[in-house]
Length: 168
Image 1 (spheres, rainbow, N blue to C red):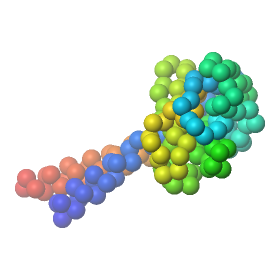
Image 2 (cartoon, rainbow, N blue to C red):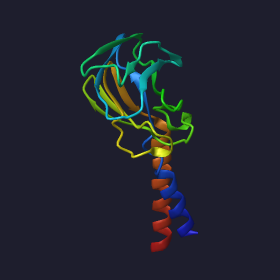
Image 3 (cartoon, rainbow, N blue to C red):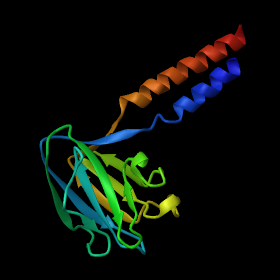
Image 4 (cartoon, rainbow, N blue to C red):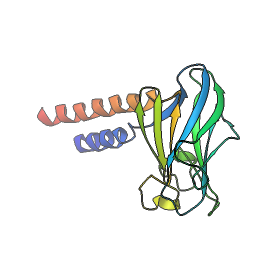
């Protein structure tokens, strides 16, 4: 029983990194092209509360520093990023469960009001370099979802109970 509790606890704690993206404050969201290494053509866009915006950052037509106004958002609005790979017809999102292969195709780094992100444009994870279309965004923040933290606490409790039974 104690080994089962330890295994369940470890499995539950694996998903502790889920997050969403939100607008930080009322105002416009700007994106700035930060480079790309992809051989494939792609365009990067975003949705605000499920409404995908028309502006996009094109990896082969943009120059580093090009600015795109993605429009107005209210503080707390949910943001989802989308990479459309024009060469292959594949589409990838910042939410892995929306991706055709259910894999994570985006990495990010947060610094104050700036969010840097990079996408991987190949189905199945490709070369996992996450630099096929890179951009900085203003007024967007990564926000950990509370559900994984609750699962982490449950996992910690199960591990503790398993260890406690082992000691007894």
